[in-house]
Structures are given as C-alpha cells and as structure tokens.
Amino acid sequence: MDDLERWTEPQRVLPLLEEIRDWVIANVLTTATLVQVGTIVGALILARVLAPSLRRWIDTRIVKRFAQLRGRRGSYIVLALTLPVLWLALEWLAMLLVGRMGLPTALIRIVTSLLAAWVIIRFTSSLVRDPLWATIVAVVAWSLAAMNILGILDDATVILDRLSFDIGKVHVSALAVLKGALLLALLLWAASQLSALAERRMTSLPRLTPSLQLLFTKLLKIGLFAVAVLVAMGSIGIDITALAVFTGAVGVGIGFGLQAMVSNFVAGIILLVERSLKIGDFVELPSGVRGEVREINIRNTVVTTNDNIDIIVPNSEFVNGAVTNWTFQDSYRRLRVPFGVAYGTDKELVRKAGLEAAAAVEFTLTDAPRRQPQVWLVAFGDSSLNFELVVWLRPEAIKRPAAVNAAYCWALETALGNNGIEIPFPQRDLHIRSAATLRFRAEHHDMRQEGEKNAHQLLP
Image (cartoon, rainbow, N blue to C red; front, side, top):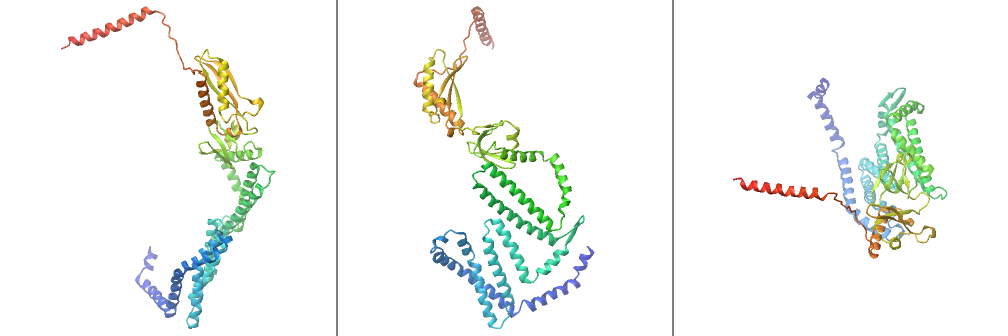
C-alpha cells in the first residue's frame, strides 16, 4: 500500500505525464506522421468503396466464365480476400507517391508489411478445411509475423524465456510452454489428418469388415494422439520416463473410480474383434431397448429405434448380458401371432382363415417350400380355443416387429370376420346352490327399506 501511494504522488506522476506528452508531440503530432495516418485511412476508405464493384467484376468475368471454378473453395477464398488485397495495392501505391514527395514512409511501410503478411497467411490458412484449425493457424502465424515486422519478436522471446518455474527437477519457461502448445496443436492436426486418410484407405479394403475397419481406425487415432502428446511434453523438457508415477496413479484411479469406463472400453474392443455385433444389426436388450445399430464406438454403441430415437448404450451391456440379435447370421425369422376363437368353431375353417390372413400380408415368406405359413392349435383356454398363426418373415420385415405384428393382427381380424368366426370374450357361469337363502335376504332388504321410510315420515 505504501508503494502504491508513493508511486501515485503528484511529484512522480506529473513528470511522467509530461514525458508522455512530449513524446506524442515529437513523434505523433507531426506533419509526416499525420500525412501517413491520413494516407492509410484514406486508402482503407477507398478500398471499402471499390471492393464491392471489384468483387462483382471478379465473380462475373472470371468465376462465371470458367465453369470449373464455380462453387470451388478457391473461388470463395479469392472473393473473400478482395478487400485486403485492394487495400494492400492502394497502400503500395500510396507509399510510392509519398516517397516521391520526400516524406517519411516508415508507418505506411509497416502497415503494408502487416497487410501483405495477413493476405498471405489468410490465403494459406483458408486451404485448411477445418474452420477451427484454420483460425488457429491464421492467428498464430500473423501474431508472429506482426511481432517480427514491428521488431519486438526478440524482446518478447527474451521476456517469455525469463518467465520460468521449476517442477521438481524440470525447469519450464513460458516460452517452452508456448512452443510446446504450438507443437502439440500442429501434431494433433497432423494426427487427425493421418487418421482420416487411414480411415479412407481402410474403407476401400474389401477383406476387412466394417467392425474391424472401425477398430483399426479408432486404435490408430488414439495411438497418434498419444504420440503427439508425448512428443509435445518432451519438447518442453519433461522426462517421459517420469510418467511411470503418473501411470501408477492412473492405475489406482482405474481401480477405484474408472472401472465402468475401462469396462466399456474393453467391451468395445471385444465387440469389434469378435464381430458379434456389427453396424446394421437389429438388436434387443434385456432393458427393453430395441432397434438398429448405427454406430459402434470404443465406449458406447448407438442404437436407433423404429421411432427414430437414438439410444446410447454402454458396450458392457452387450458383453455382460444376453442380447437378442435378430440379424446375426440369418435374416429370416419366424413370427407367432396368438388368437382365440369360440368353442365349437370348425378347426379347418380356422386354418383356412389364418392362411388367408397370412397371404394378405406382404411380409409373409411364400417362396420357401419348407417355411410355409401354418395355423397351430396350442391350448384350450377358459373361454376360447387358442391358436397361433406361425409365419416366416421376409428379411425387410425383421427390423419392424411392431408394425409387422400389427399387420397380421389386422389381417386375422378381417379374415375371421369374413369366415363368420367369432372371437370370444371371457364369460362366467353363476350357479346358485340355495334359492331360499337368496329370497330371504331380498325380503329382509325390502322390509328394512320400508321401515326406514316410515321412520322418516313420523319425524316432525
């Protein structure tokens, strides 16, 4: 607090303000500086006025004339750089004119160099398809170029190198951390590009199933990212062998809190290697989840239901529990649709109606002699003869169980009605063993009601 009061004393502040004023008058409020600032601002205003017309001319005369450039990424980059390029050209022209007049051009030269660096870096970074990486490359490269142009790059390097700290026996400086971060970003970008290239190459190999392709690409991506992190850590002076302690701590963490994550990770590898589950399979889990497998990731699997709802299921559920895979090896499945008819109904007529219902549904498999529709009498119910319509389904019907069952129920009700077959409802027969007791209770109830009525009449 005393230091703050000492530095804010008027006898210390006033000389500093006077020095700043004198520097501004001597270096900023001069004719040469004001001419250069006016030239820079005037060039910017003129560029903003002329840029729309130049952009339309480039679009109509060049891009549209060469049809192969239309819609290409390069055409959009050129149109986006119209304003800075035009401003740069005007700055170059202004620098020549001011120099011919014998005036200083140092400020104009700095702005021109910054603009040239920005145009080159912006054009180069635009070739990167990922917008995030393109922005990172542009910002970092232009910052370094700007500090170099202004002549402060060496001073900034020295200052960052002096800002250091120790981690055990490792001496780490802010400059080393900054270099490591830049190297890590570069290596991660290279790893993502290599993994994408490897994924495209693996998808063109017919001998590899989609599950193995996914497994190899995931493992390759994880390995490349791990190598990128280790190399970046080594670049700032961290001894990689010292990570043994960290690995032990991670092992303890896995033992206590990361069991589920590791279990899902291992289960994902098992699923991809064993190929017991693949993309496109129609599965049903004990939890009630039923749908088509859309993605198999290292930690979870995405199952899309027939209602177009994506459910993320941990991989351990597919390994530790019983999973019904409707399309594992064979795409033909048999369906049983239960129904009942009244006692006394002709069974052959029921068979005829059931086969008519099966023939009326488009999902029935009819071209396999040993898999023809059947009608089974399966039980004698309390109120009905219980039958089952047994049909084999076509492959396209396997992934629509609810809609298929509804279609057969609809067709069965129609066929039974057309053949005059009654669908019974539960009935109960009541047998009265003693009528006298029932009659006595009825007479007692009537007498009680009559007594209550007379009592109400006697009340005032």
